[in-house]
Length: 164
Image 1 (cartoon, rainbow, N blue to C red):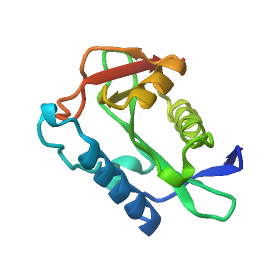
Image 2: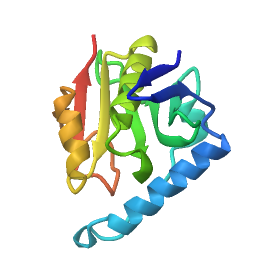
Image 3: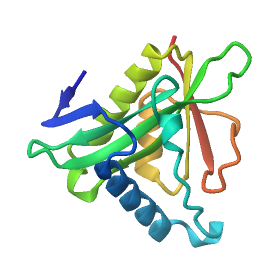
């Protein structure tokens, strides 16, 4: 179901669309260019399309009123943690031309709804502390820091939010 927020429409799309490739290339290019040098070299890695597709996940793209893709994010099922059914947020990105317009919030709203619809009891994600705005957004959305749940070499912070 499309979601309109601040003149942005977010909808699920196949994760192998050309606009998804373009957004993810921009995301990886930006992360590589801005990655803290003290942490070493950025590891460019995309989540496989199959992991961001039904029935184990989803991918959403945010479109501006002209139909231009300005943001994205994915969700994938990961291993349970005890009784906790976990879905992981991946590749949340807002292109510079979409920033300051509620795009990241709209993308996260859609991903969180999808996680609940898929049966999640918690949503997890990792990020890098150098992404100050991202960390602030996650904390404002009730994500709390947690122990690392993966070995992502780019991550310095792991978050979890219960959803049921």
